[in-house]
Image (tube, rainbow over all chains, first blue to last red; front, side):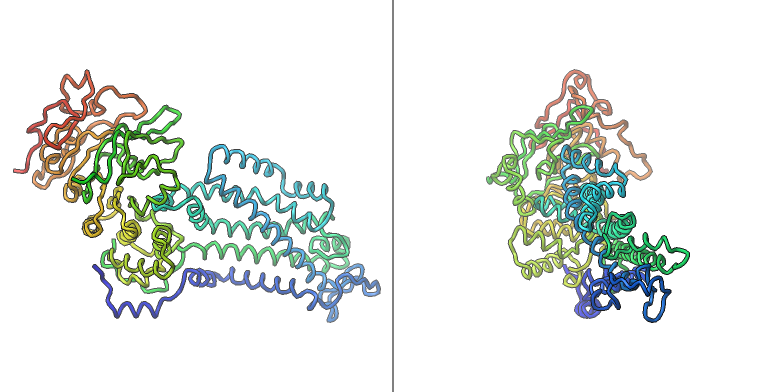
Length: 307
Length: 330
């Protein structure tokens, strides 16, 4: 009882040999904002990695004779009140922002996702206990919790990462839990159980179905962490001088707003571009990761029994 | 005579809720012989699906609880198996097809992946062998260009095609028992006929028995060897297809058949069964169908009828004499 005709088969083979991943990538590229976001983020990443090579000056080198110079051919973005090159500081600042964002998201993923999965899948008392614990964390305003933890442990980049990671963990846990609750009740999960899948494989199936929610949350968490790091550094609780951070530089630029506007424009623009490209990327990923949204590039196979 | 494939004796499935214990399945007993197709009919909430889920041990405990005097499948006491041992029974020995093909495949995995996953789990095939077998299976259920469709996702298939994929997955490990829970209800009539034929052919090939759950009496009459009619968590009538449909011996079966359209009675109104099924959380001392029964006799109001063999192999739990109540096709 087969309907395959050899000619159609070969024809189809030529047209489609794309995997799901390739289709998702194609769908992603079709979203222009997302592509721009991805490119921007890649550039920022490269700049951060290659900071020692491409930064024209030492970001901490003080040269008072050159202080508060406007942008010029030597100092593309001008200099600050200590005569430090702003461009070099922005380049080194990218390192801090991205590494904080990355570490925070990894921490939140590693803690929040298992908590959410266990909570949503097990239900009952385990769910209650874990979620009340997470609710406990959520009752604090996020920045305040960050300030409290950094205040307790001392201002330092590592402590900022830890603090922001703890702030984001419950958010991840709750999103994963609610998505798990919805997916757990789906017929295909029962069907998978009926096919002899154990708990591990069921969790795998659930994880596959909530991946887009997690990916979107990763991008939201990443940009939130970048902003939060800038805020904490702005308040003097994050990166300590002479290391450069966008938030810290913004805070110092405040005093020279009228005389040297480039000083605050540069970090503002850096934060904005970074956060926006991550957000665009997140939107694009969310759409691309949904198999249903893939527009067909393959000729639809003839279905003699189509309903 | 060989032993039956499945013996269910006094199966009781209940759920604890705030309103008390709901007896979803209340003392169901039946046997299923090898190669037999058994129909399970009844309206929504009569316990058909719950019976199937109980046999598969898919009822979450708690809040559910599954008890039986005997639940024996091919010599195995299913209730004595641990969850881990049960994993090896599911799909490999007992497979299940669900009602809604739109929702019983994982939307984010390709159908090939879903097929091979089961094959690798139960038959311990390696990747390439599983892939070959998956293509064979898809061809077997009539998916055109099976090889190129392995990488396709469920949303790229129509409902009928998805149900074919489900059948391929369910039959992939040559189970001895296939439970089809309203497998064709969500499909339109022409596709329904194809799927029924397909299942019929395939189970004959691999020699599997089938429990066919449906509320479509015509379909059951066509497909099954025997039928169990369920109401309020119990079997109220059971027997060979011909006997049950030509000589219904329970008020509920008669009611069900009276509300099915008949081509030979054009222009006549259908007679629906008035009222609603009873609340299963209340204890029942009388026939659960009594409040809706059009044929009740005095004895119905004093005691509950037991399931007795009214004709050879034809069981019913009804006091009323329904002989001649069903109008034969003239």
